[in-house]
Image 1 (cartoon, rainbow, N blue to C red):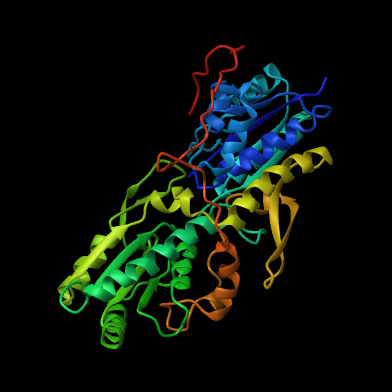
Image 2 (tube, rainbow, N blue to C red):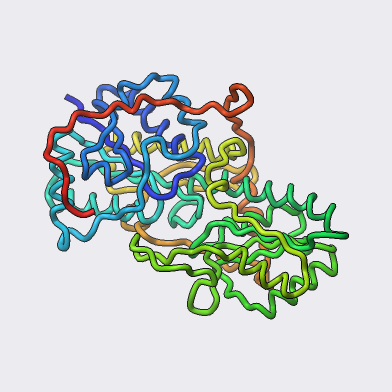
Length: 418
C-alpha cells in the first residue's frame, strides 16, 4: 500500500506559504498510486513530536484550493528547532515512533533557513538509521535570505507590499511637508539581511535621486553620515522617507537589540523606528514613524502573482521530486532570464541551505550605502509583478475554512523537550 505524506509549516508565516501547501496537497492527490493520505502536523515539528496531526483527506477540495489565496499558516507554525541527536536522542526516537505509527514515507518541511536545518537533521538521522523516509524542504521566507535559490516564496509579496506602501505614503508626505511632517520612518523586517528594506527602493524610478533613504542590515549605521544625508534629501525634495531594516547594525551589535531570545539564541529586536524618529526630531524635523510588522507578511490582498505562482509550484515540485526518488533536498528556483522573467525548479542539497543566510550583495547597494543600484532593480522588479487578488465576500477577502480533523493518537503523550 502507498505510504502517507506528512507536511508541516515552520518559522514566520507569509502571504503565500499556504499556496505551497495547496501545491503539495493537490499534486499528491493526483497520484494515489504513489501516496496514501496527506497529513499535516500542527505547529511544525512540535506537532510531529506531540503527534498532533490533521487528516487532509477529509477536507473539501474547494477549501484546499482556497489555500492558494489564504495568508498565514493554515496548520500552525513554530520557531522551534531539533537539538543535536547526541544531546537529545529522545527527540529523534520520538520522531521515528510517530512516523512509523502513521506510516509516513515522505516528510515535507516548509520554511526558511532554520527550518531547512531541522529538515536536514531529520534527513541525516533517517540515513544513519537506515529509515525509508523521503525528506524534502520547501522554501519560504519573506527575508529572502535562503541561498541556492533565486528567491524565496513570500518575499515577492512582502516586497510588493512595502514598495507600494512607500509609494503611497510618499504622496501623503509630499502634500503635508510644507507645514507639517518632513520625515517618515518605516521599520521593516530583516535581521541579518536587508532585502525587504532594499525592496522599498522600487517605489521610485530613479535609483540615484529620490526622497528615500534605505538603512540596510549590511551597512553599519553612522549617525553623523545619516543626518548629513537626511539634510541633503530634505533640502532637495522638501521631505524624506527612511526605510530601515530591523537588523540595522551599530558597530558590533544591533541598533535596536531588546533582549536575547532562547529561540535559536537570536536577539530580540524592536524599537528601531522610534529611536530613529527621536534622532531626527532632535535634529529639527517633525517625524512620523511606523512598523510594518505582521502587515508586510500577511497582506494577501496585495500579493505578487509571480510569488503566488512560485509558491504553489514549489509545493508541487516537492511532490514531483519525491516521485522521482529524490530526497534530502530543498526545492530551489532557478532564474533563466531577467526580461522576460523566466524560471525553473530543481532540487539542491539540504546541507547547502540549512541555516545559511544570504545577504544583499554589495553590487546591489548604492555606493553611498543609502539606496539600491540598477542591478538590484533588475533582480527585484520581476518578483513583484502581477496581481493575484483573493475573492471577496461582503467587502472583505474570503479565505479557506478547513475542518482540521485530528488524526487519532496511537502513542503515549510526549513529555520531552521542547
